[in-house]
Length: 429
Image (cartoon, rainbow, N blue to C red; front, side, top):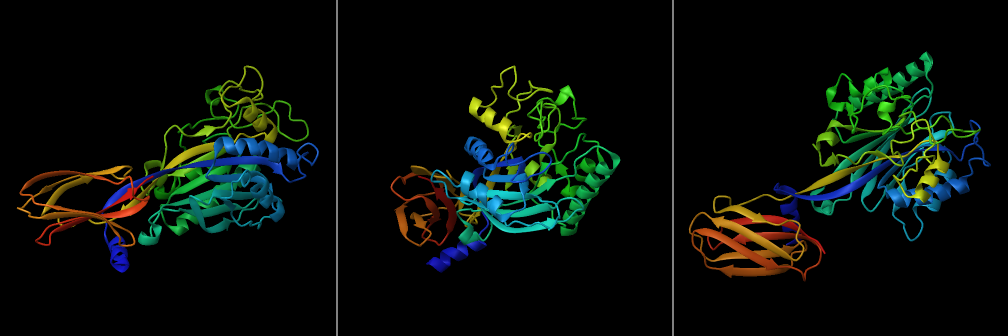
């Protein structure tokens, strides 16, 4: 029976949706664990930064958490996992492997919720300045053992060259061009998410045009909030600026107040339009702590910033000169079972997922006699069986299921002549 059910799951192709939401967060951590650019263990202390992150992370609750500006050091990237993420009885966060091909001490990193996701592979696109890291994750779908199919999310994390002179612009253009050529060589339109501190001041810059107007339209990226323009020091984009949280930077954070949109999460067409089980949720994109009222000001200056609780605002101000950017995506995992017996059972409808009861309706096309309804567990246990006499017409049936455990179940309808319908549903608690 187990083998028969496995074959049914692998070969049948009737799609019944299940859905989940993933929260994606990207954050420039401002030289975490680095002595660089005026930042040191005194004015950018890791213990202090850990305490700030301990407030920010539970507030956002990211399932995917990518970072820039962390020291390329195993102990330091592990420190965030141990000291910030997996605390207070939380144990499910994991991280990617650390790759440091660039001579620069700054690295990127991916942390993820292993209850929902598994890291399948990772790779690097090397540039003249810093590595661009690519992480391929898959969703831990409940039916994965039976279908060998699930939803993938590929996170690309970059920290592009800073600066505004011609050499800096040329270097950024080279970095994004290398990435797009790499994706083009792979040749697959996929669920790509491209995030990072891009250091770009305008959507018209070549580095940005490379990703939104690449020759191969299938791998182009899209801005989830669709806000092109000259972002730098422009009051038209006060709702979207991500840097700087400070006006007076001192020796470590950059000053100048909120006047740049440096930090991005970009999405592929697949995610924009939900073409492959993952879709951006409209309205979920946000620079956390940005209220649109602090142009050229610190985020904690007057007027009072009420976009987040006061303790979160304080943590954002002290943690980094950048704000984290977040968005949500929905995962529509399809469960594959084929409809059989369409010539005999028409318009078979039932609620999926199921909580307390399964409400079933269908029509019999021919004069079906002695129809049987069965519900079978994945391991072949018969949970429910009922048979009744019926002639041509509509059938409405309600089956109480509050007593059965959560999981995946088969629904079977058949008659004495061998005609049958097989479907599948998920039982929730």
